[in-house]
Length: 347
Image 1 (cartoon, rainbow, N blue to C red):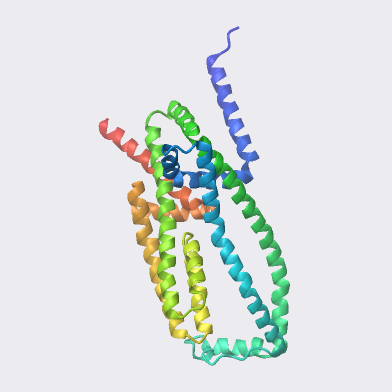
Image 2: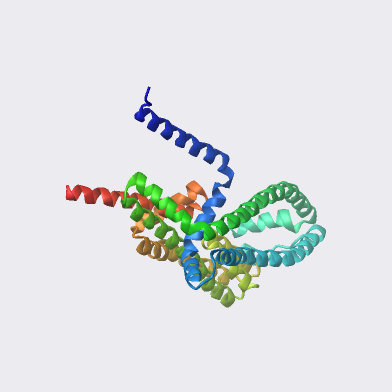
């Protein structure tokens, strides 16, 4: 009895689907690391091609680029951690003084508009009195132990993801051309020649998003760094670096310039603090709603609104890596839409 070709085809499809689902389930906790490796490889692939054309071997190129990216990712956070550790001694001395003698209410607190009276009353009740301050610090420390325990486990998980991403990135750099060729052959066989252009659109969207987020974030850090310096903020370079790093994440920069503004207010520089906060809001609004969408959309051929939806929708759905996957998914959908419209017009 000859086997039924339709039955064999159905059996192969079921087998492939089952294998893919099993692989996703098995690698579920590593998907974020693999996604990060793919995003970094796409963003820096032109540099990889330039090095290999210059005569550098694939393995040497992979090792060099992976090491450079590891330094670029780790050094800023290491510098930030060292600076925070240095400031921890000042914070510890301040907490000891607060336990022993309390902290008098600054005169400028009562002058704050709308909330000045309430804040001054709360300060007098909880911080000016040494016993109340000691009780408040004890409650905060009790809650902080659990918080730092959870934070430590999360940090260990993030470090593991980073290390696995760098390992995967090395192999993508080294074996990427063969993987791209095999993937294009398989996908073209399954979906036809138009899939190549759709894939290129997705790659361009990822690369444009990385460039838009990183370059604009660094520009935000530089501009706000000048504002920190002019406002007389202590450690303006540290705040500028933190702003540039976190500005790639929506709502990351406001966290830093908000802390900078509060620091200035705490130093009795209320006007400077307000100006830094307002200026920061303007810079971030212009960058997030105009510069980034235009920069990303022009390179990836995605309209303004869809860039915003891709960035924020991807962030909400996939986390940080969704910042780059979101526009790629939108670009694929738009490419399919344009192909369908073109076919309809020809018909």
